[in-house]
Length: 57
Image (cartoon, rainbow, N blue to C red; front, side):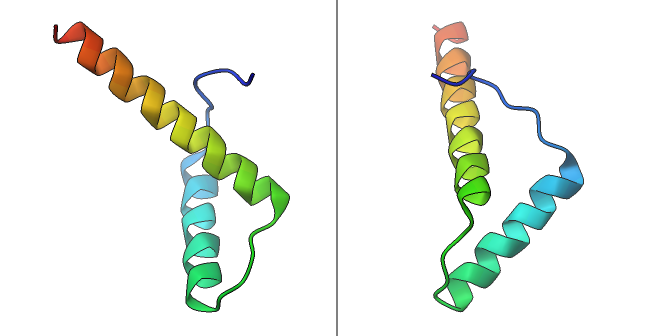
């Protein structure tokens, strides 16, 4: 299992968002690296939300 938080440079994240938007608009697939970055970002978001919810209990 990957670590719960992945550091991503702001410019790299913006570039990923651009690629995802372009892929969606043109009905294209993403690269395996882009899919991994998206999965890492989702895992980071889910972990952050869980920790925030637990800290508010």
